[in-house]
Image (cartoon, rainbow, N blue to C red; front, side, top):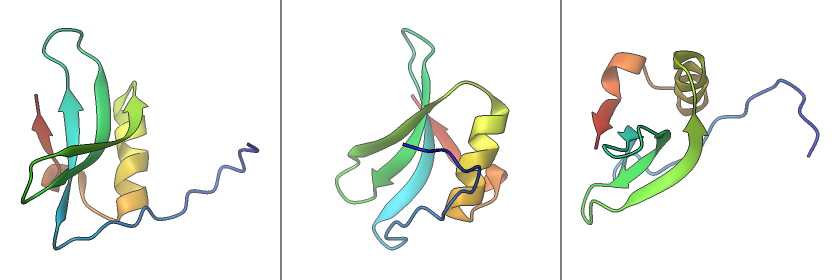
Length: 72
């Protein structure tokens, strides 16, 4: 895969999914993705290592950082 530096919007169903940051209690690993609001099932998009990675996810989803909750 060739990286161009351009990020396309991540599409998700805003009526069924919520963007979240998922942090592991055991390992501390942090990932971003979506939670289905009815089943609470987490759909992992990617691992993040810094706040910069989370900012990229925010740009891709079109949602403000303070609107994304953290789950454990």
